Image (tube, rainbow, N blue to C red):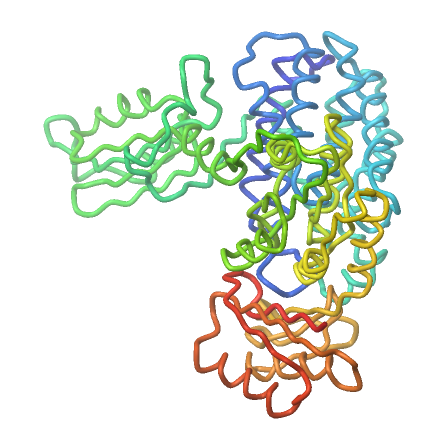
Length: 553
């Protein structure tokens, strides 16, 4: 059905459908990670960002577009995680800054909004790179406008946007050699495509349902406060049952599972139907489980029945991922450090070295802008130094800095756990000069020598180096130094890279969750035998993605 205006109610549906469509393809987007370690999280980060907007409007019904737009913008900014999530939030900040001026939006106003979205996204990145999410949103918008003939056809624009987004996405490897070499398209651009596909479907009257379904949660595990009297059912119910066909209702011998499945499909999606003898097992995602059950009962009686609120399950999953509780410092301090780390051993070490709060996060687990702001509140200091310790967390930390006005927040450009460790190991507030302390921290980052060992989760080529799935890689930032089928040999090679022809005296090794005691002892013996002048200290970091974090000082 052709529509000339976007109302608040329609925009809400578009956002939910865009989120659901992205969520349904999140694993696919995650797998587009260029670097071959199990940390692909672009899809998850963009989902978290979108969900921040949905969460902000869940309890708002029949509101004008300007009200919905403003709430979405604020929610997405707080929920933004990872570089792709921050860029996405800034894109929607631009879009919503325009839509917030109108109670309904026509074609011209929508174009004004999308132009502002492109500008805002580009402005959020200090050095924009083409062949990324930025290229996809810019080219899709520009070319869709050129192709749209009718000045009032929002539907035509959205349809053209989707076509041009796909074309632009497919071309990203031609603009970025790293994508071409890895044989993938840009993951952030793929996320935009799925969001806009959901937008178009909602505009056409089709509500995209979240097809992902986690393992059932017991009643004890569920936090029912996450769905209360003001909540709205967005994601439907996962409805499963065993139906015993009965001869008093139908001719059991003539029952057609295909026909039954086709007829029940009008009530929902993600349908799985299996018939064993005269028992039918059904799984369906639906907004109206009562209609499903009423229809099914025309064929027989239920042997088992389970209905789960997917909105509640989804809310709980997101809350667990994004909410962290920090102990508030009641007495205001002059200086404090907020760092990000993963693994109990590393978290404990960072605290021992002087970090006032350590946010549990890192590679594949990026904290949101909101989590940073909560940490800033809790630490209660005049000047707060932030150690993101990951390139994909820097943007969220900087966005939190922009929004936080109660303290002087200074984000140190630490892009790895090793750099964070080096900063903390020489932390000194004695000068009581924030500029001097920040300069010392920055110098510690520049002088850091550290790298990681992790298992390659796919075969690829990076800067001419052939990586085999299942082998291990030793790397510094995104530069692969060595690769080997054995984890121990990879760690040895990385250590040799750091210590050969070098004046380093100390080697600090944090072990991850995988290396065993025997392997760790062999690694320690290797250092003591081959580098007698180097003192080695090995401790359990407990980090998940990196088998070894190796720091030379």
